[in-house]
Image (cartoon, rainbow, N blue to C red; front, side, top):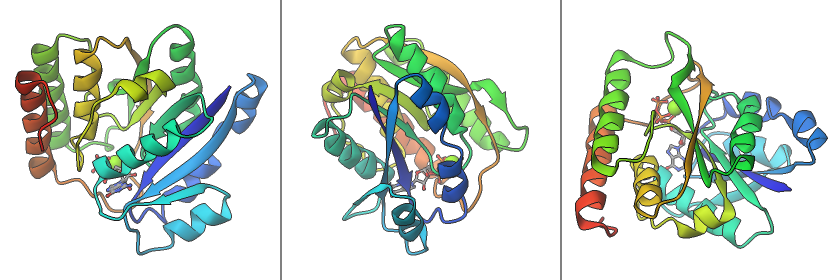
Length: 233
Ligand SMILES: Nc1nc2c(ncn2[C@@H]2O[C@H](COP(=O)(O)OP(=O)(O)OP(=O)(O)O)[C@@H](O)[C@H]2O)c(=O)[nH]1
Ligand SMILES: [Mg+2]
């Protein structure tokens, strides 16, 4: 089993070394899983790319900044590769790479897509601002009302996928609304979505997300995908 770990990066020189160091290589290889790490970079001007290169990661560079553009580019590269599954997690050291093992176990149990849930998991009390905590809960509640498919953390940045699930997703997000669109597209096409409680810690380095601006984009994406049922920019 070959698993590609996709890390979206934009100026993550402070966090990336600890994310790479925490990859559960030994645990996974004892289970017959071989991992490769791919950085999709949105135009870092710090030493993110040097760190990734030295660690032997595959590097994909975006032409235009935007997490959604970056993940979609990473998905295309994955689909053209010989990897069987993809795991994506933010490169800001908020997620614990050792949770990859239980995300993959959920795929083994039959899920097409697994969403790591911070809101049902173990969250450091200072990891999420009150505004973001409220926003994440409200957006998740709206998502369930609109699509009906179970979800407990719509804005999670830690997901795992079978290859056929990535091939099925129909996405056009530019920015931080991409995770909401991944959920919406999976729910509309009836993919089996699994959920795993995960750890969430304090971010290392500067956040790129603007709570109100990006929260509004996420809400707009949830509503347009539900009622137009096609991709709208
Ligand atoms: N490839 C790529 N990655 C990006 C881009 N913008 C942000 N990222 C990465 O996406 C991940 C999430 O970004 P964050 O700024 O942590 O946003 P967030 O986790 O939603 O919000 P916080 O809770 O404030 O940390 C990080 O690993 C960023 O480096 C981009 O334009 N392209
Ligand atoms: Mg973050």
